[in-house]
Image (tube, rainbow, N blue to C red):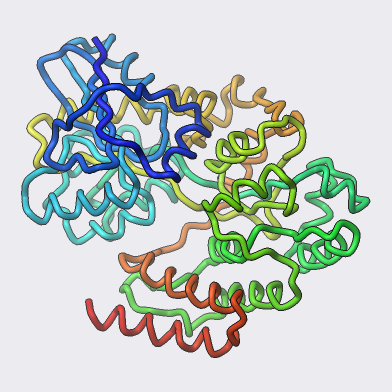
Amino acid sequence: MKKFLRLTATTVLALSVLAACGGNENTNGDGGDTDNAGDDTTSETIGDGDIELVFWEFGNTGYDKLIEEYVEENPNVTINLQNSDMNDLHDNLFTSISAGTGAPDITMIEEAQIERYRNAEHAFTNLYDLGAEEVSENYLDWVWQNGENADGDFLFGLPTDIGPTVMFYRTDVFEEAGFDSSPEAVSDLVATWDDFENVAKEIQEKTGKQMVDGAELVYNARRDQATEQYFNTDDELIVEEHNQISDAYNYVASLLDQDLIGNIPLWTPEWFAGMDEGSYATMLAPAWMQGVIKDNSPEEGVWSLTTMPEGAGNWGGSYLTVPAESEHPEEAYKFIEWLTAPEQQLKAFLDYGLFPSAPAVYEMPEFLEYEDSYFGGAPVAQIFSEAAEAVVPVYKGRNYYPVDGEVKEAIDNVAAGSDPQEEWEAALVRMERILDRQ
């Protein structure tokens, strides 16, 4: 039996992502059935079993379909799948474990957000105690290690998907500028960040269009390629001890100064419209963005994808954890072990574009043969898997997002006309203030 309760409308962003990935939630129903269910939460109960597992997720994973398959094979289990905004989920989880009550049996945690919980091992079940070591070889080493504590003897979660980054691009804009628009040709054409800047100049000169929507995705692309970012493993701020972050910032500031990139904020109506209208030529983004592009620019063969200049990074991906409050940790673990197994990760990729964290999938015939007609028949799986295996893991730290936000504020101010150096120095001051308040 499947019951569905929609508590209220989701946010604009969540709606876009849901629609992009084929979400088909029923909009009927009312009411909430958990203490933590907020205004933007949907709840769906699947199964008739006596053991109910409450499962918090964000985004559009398509897990409802896989859960139906699981409960059919395990009729003693019922799973209450609750979907909410990513930030709301993490805030609610933090509040719940701090209070010692209200946490679910299973919760998704985004890969960078996991740093917020590293000092709260007591609030989670060590998945090594439930046999996780036996499946460790199923996953990319860097992804698995990110789910452990510093000593490597406590495992917070099993990896779901990852977000290897690539360069999506509009074939029509490249062709209008006189370039060969095949993935191979564009990869060779834009092999470095210097190439990216030079091609941006040519595209602007020949088409009047800008290379990319705005500064944020360019900065993210270079940030995610950095082997060191904001913190060392002692959570000390190291932004001024290496030049990878400042180089990324200065590169973006230079592109803005030359008017080679737009100033269209992510997730705004203008950003979605530009995707379809071709007002910008490229989008530097992770695997999970492909559904967003398809939803907002539905014509096949216009967008394609190729490798990122100077190599891939990773943006996003998640873990499934079992909070210590769960009364059914063994059953919860059994379910998430099944859900994150290579066979289910393949299904999640084919159905919803969630890129697997299990490299065994990369060798599966269905994966290798996967070509996407939307992207002009480009070897999507091959491009993403090569990007995934090229990722160099980097420590992010529990204050990653607040510090990253200060750089983004500086970039926004530069885009609005402020002096880049003054904004950089001001951002450093704000970073220190944030850390002083910890």
